[in-house]
Image 1: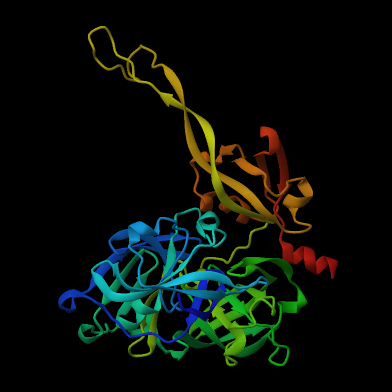
Image 2: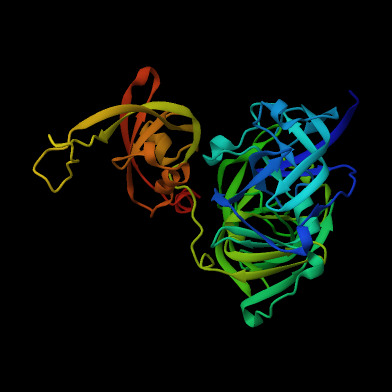
Length: 452
């Protein structure tokens, strides 16, 4: 196999591939549009994508250049062929990882078909975003879809619609929406915006990144006064890179502005400069806009005409929340749970008894596998850490509600509630020991301000 070096830049769930590719197209039959339903998990769009006839789940990332496949060991069923070995380098402090570049693949999203597509396959089991999202994810896809279509994303109704650019007509939405010019660097889309920090309006150029969970990432720049608001921040885990975890500072900006779209008190993360050194090679870039902010709009991406149309939706005025507990949860495997089941009984004539009869319906139990929501990180000095919770504790109930029937997102929702609310958790520790803890959610910024 021929060896080559391809650099991949991963921020949270961002993969930006820099290399040369043939411009094979994704085609829609007869120029028609196509509507594809998606899941929204952790502010990320999860789509069904077929690779050589096998349906998988991919994150839609507006910056990634080629499909990236991971968390899928049975590549024989995908008929992966015509491969060469490559090495990838990503965010984090670790080194490069080995992967395969495969050519001549058939990739399908809805009715859009791409033939002779390149795919990058990562075999490192640590590169797996399923635990962090709580839903199955096998890879990331992006630029190949966006470059060949006008792409409508409806975050409210959770669908994506592809249009043939030659047959698309823009609707007159008057004052309800705004059109913005896009610029591109290394196939990644950028937009000019404005942030207000300590009451100073600062123009910024930001990557539009549907593959990031956060609202905003900004690169600290003291010459431009891009820094944490009022100097108040807390250090936190920001995401996982190909080469390790990424940490940084979390803070707020007074406001974020795109034309007459203004959002106030917006969450922002300032990633550690060492972890994102490659991302900063585009000198004009000041950060990125992620899913927590993008989901407040219904969006039309038009790469062929280098523009984007934004229309505010019902999410627009919702507050920006932080996790006030300090707990970082992942779905780490499964646990065996005893579950009560109502067993239907019958009378002597073979008729089914129901609740309206005087005959008691009997119960029985069964054992089922349920997701194990595990604490994988704890913010230092956080309420959860000070209560005695530990990394690797499995949370089995929150406020008396069993987690076995929750999604990961539902479980995390308890930790973004109002400041001062008491949270009670029961965990399973080593040796199947069950322990209970309680703590109050805190406004970490107020606490930091008091300490300063």
